Length: 80
Image 1 (cartoon, rainbow, N blue to C red):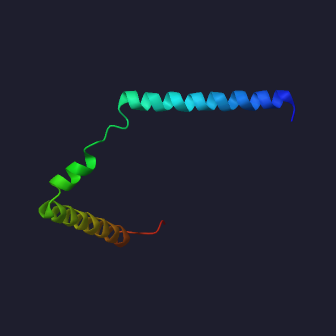
Image 2 (image 1 turned 90 degrees about the vertical axis):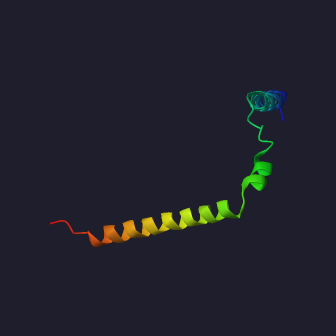
Image 3 (image 1 turned 60 degrees about the vertical axis):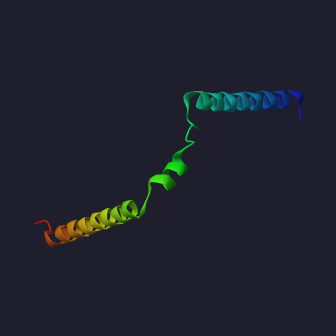
């Protein structure tokens, strides 16, 4: 390879590395990685009642969607 291509590849890779480092430092400074208590709070505050409520709400949501689909099929009329 010629020296100019090697210099270009070295320059581009250095630039991309610096860009990645800047992005990492920005993420650390702005608190993008500060989620230290997520899993602890999930285990601490999710009891059986909350999980049962979540399942019940999901079932209600699915039933409402099915009811809506049935109503749409029932009211379908082809164009004249």
